[in-house]
Image (spheres, rainbow, N blue to C red):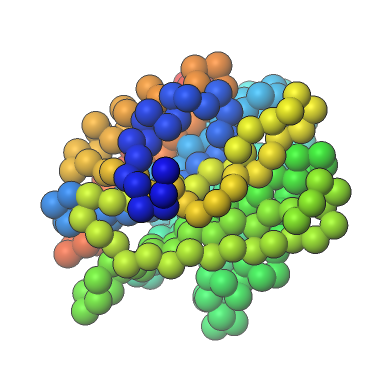
Length: 242
């Protein structure tokens, strides 16, 4: 299978028990809406004890049961944030890093992520994944994805990968944190973001994603469709708890 092969994201997810956390960016087939999606999964009680909630032009994670929250450092964060004519989606607190760099005029998406690296959770060294979609009336829709991951099993150094796309009708790109495991540790996503098909109907897209995630491990899903002409948004949040 080549990088140019369009994949069905639902079929892809159904074959994987634990892809971890995943981000989608793209464009609907009618070219009217930008597509953004983010899901989280969990295998520990601390990771599963979460929900998405709307927060300040985006979403954040919070504990479903505060009494069961043992370590908030890598599980509680702002995941999605609108900033002017941009939408930022990440799997950690580097959402705030990107927002702060842009607001302070200290560079953009790439510059911000060059100050961060993978998560400090050996032996997995969970990759930090990110996306930014920019809405400019005079230009075609464009988006970027990134992954920061360990260069080796010891977390000796960080490799940073950036991918830039001009949107195409009916096409999205998907990146997630884990490619698999050996029973003792999880391995990072390998290769370029996966080219997938999108749909014009947000509810069809949301239902397809949610139903394709492993029932035992899925935790929460967020989907946003942004009208490119008006910047009006429609959001869907699905939580396993609550």
